[in-house]
Length: 106
Image 1: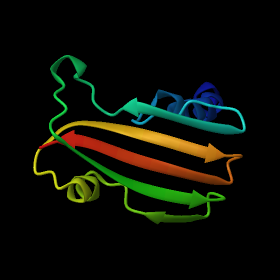
Image 2 (image 1 turned 180 degrees about the vertical axis):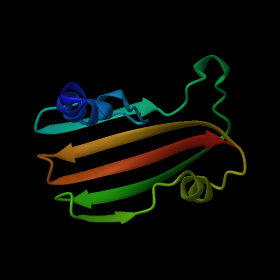
Image 3 (image 1 turned 45 degrees about the vertical axis):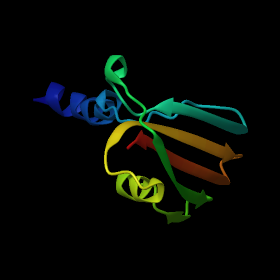
């Protein structure tokens, strides 16, 4: 019983390491920007003829505004069919950051 009680904190703290989500934001220096795909089936990707973007902004990790959802992105680009999606992340000193969703389709 004592063994279980002692190992419980390690189990709880280690559980976060097993979780994954997309997008994964790699650690960077003071200023960073990058773009990566949200798709997992790259061998079947078709871009389409239209592009839509939407942006969410954040200041100090406290104030956030904008709508970077897939629906808003598709509506901004006039898309009815989404074929592929990317994201772009930009941050300056962790004070100001933007997250942009980019969708391609028809």
